[in-house]
Image (cartoon, rainbow, N blue to C red):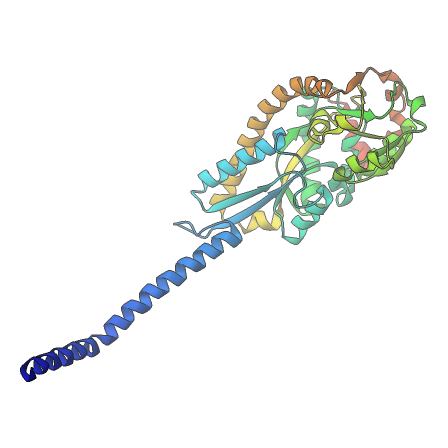
Length: 357
């Protein structure tokens, strides 16, 4: 027994000595493992908070892309294509987060967020006239006759002047532009001439041109966020609104507006813009990735847009909306009253646009 106890004691001392002798190395290994675990947790938390992980080969970036269209709209599908192209082209160095359907706020609120740096990209146009008044002619009624005319305007001298105004005055860079369907009047009553608008209270974007247009047509325009329209109709605050068919469908307006008047009073376009500060924070190679993706996004959206335009009317009619022909020439006859209100700089761009018909 004594011999056995002695052997156990020797073995125990040897084990202790071995542990003490290798203690520093063992502790270091434990700390390294703990450090790896903590690093993984931090990386996971950072990925959750920022939506991106550091990519090999350079610093990583995040672009927050918010817009007002719903998930079925061609704008949103184009935004997802942009995300796909940017993330692939940057090899993961840029992560794009897309927020549709006013989920980060109204169009005006998102524009303000871009200026404060809490959002980066959106799809917008006339609302920018708050910061860049010279572009306020963009929504002038019956200025653009068809899509070929539209392309000549936007891709030429007029479009260049507008983009420079947006950059200089609003601090946003136009990455590309998207065509918009014609704007239609929807209402709780049938309207075929301007004379029938006297009791119509119509929601319009918070853009002076739209207010002036509908005042000229004889209605009572009320600037309001698009997200407030549905409830406002139900409450009796308004009884009409105007928009392209895509937004009429995506907002479910067939449920509250039984009539869609074929006014087609504005054929316009819209820009995909990025905050200039954010754009300039990107390395040159990533700027090229973003610009290339925007160009491909335009081509992709254009195909969706034309295919969608053919189906929109069918969907709205199936939802119970009646399309009403109007005496368009009577609306067009009131256009000069609106154009007369343009500033000299706005009128110069307007005349150049009309001359391209």
